[in-house]
Length: 538
Ligand SMILES: Cc1ncc(COP(=O)(O)O)c(C=O)c1O
Ligand SMILES: N[C@@H](CCOP(=O)(O)O)C(=O)O
Image 1 (cartoon, rainbow, N blue to C red):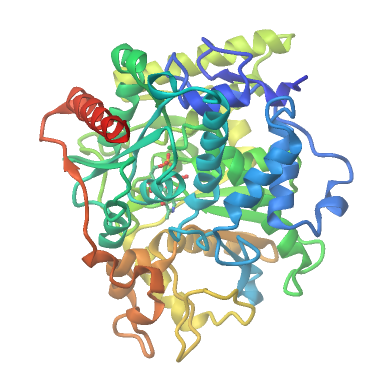
Image 2: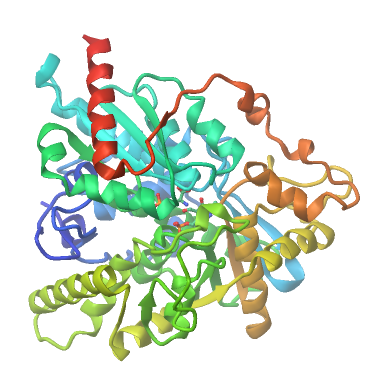
């Protein structure tokens, strides 16, 4: 038997009553919507005492069990999947917390201790193992063409791609295609992806931006031809498993911070999240909705600020700023993984706020209305470039969220000021700091979050802030060098993990999608490369 939080529906209403396996394997719903649980589960009443001293994997097991029926994945199997996923992390705590600025109650949640040094590993190590688990089960006793073969298609601005590749390389019955914007990911990120030569890994460069790559992926999901011949799957945060796996570190860090000697007992906790596609902070919202006592979630954007404009404009979600109608798309910033014009996961959040604020008397009617509202908003986004949500929806959103926009200059200044002024004494092993001065070295995405945290602290003195550190600075050498090259004791080579040494010189494999080939061109490449890969196995 499954509970409502273990059953899933599409935000646009065409599919409902799906299992966790269905939504993981499909990725995107057939109506273009995103899968969400029919209900957000509540926490057991004694969760805080019971969960306080659990390991990261044990905590993940408790949380995931609320969303995955044991009739689908027996509890012991789920435990094995989780333990395998996090055994690849370098730090025993998996996502440790450091006291970045104890005087200000500012903590940093380090999410970069996984194989590719970014927060995406937390979800993509698990997703790779979920795929493997379901494929092994589907293929018992099958051979050759009868085997279920999954074709993963993803878009990346740098981090999802490498984390997905590391989560899936060499796995049986799955091919992974990653599209990324040519020249717009950092050299280390590009090398991380293209130096993986396993036969089931395919990198494709696209002329354009991350949004162009994301549009190609969505068009491929909507293509009946490809879907009837290949089983298409997703690794982007459109895949529900990505959001689910990330919920764990919101609980883990809350419990870690409230146990820290640097935490003032009883003070409220805010969490600040550098945001692009809204997948990371959405997991925080699920945690809060389940009952995690976080007083506010703060969305931190770079100059690609559609989310910040939504909150500040009273609920207008629009690709182009109202006062900048001639703006022509995504800006290139020092935090390139967040150079995203449209945040795909926002649809999930809007669905819940539409559902919660609807006045209909039954949950069934409210669900249907929420699907209708979301479908109409997303249609408007496509046809008119934006939409306005009702007052009740923006008010509900503001009760849970605040937002900050951080400029390029502020990003660099924050990396510099942190290096000069923050010398945490409780640093986890593998944290990036100068061995001469002890100054902490932020990556530019994390710096966007820290700058937003500083502003939030000014308005809310005494409130504990957990700022999410989403990547290791070594992935973004140019921004870090720009901020620190003149600073005493700084040397980039010192923060370079041994895993990155020589990476850029390794042999690579990548296919360039011809300019103007569009999603149809990508489809033909996918078909040809899958065929070639399968022939190689026969
Ligand atoms: C390093 C880094 N920080 C922040 C983000 C933004 O996260 P999200 O897209 O889940 O909002 C990304 C990309 O997604 C990233 O790679
Ligand atoms: N920043 C991301 C962009 C893709 O977002 P996703 O979270 O939806 O996979 C990246 O690094 O690729």
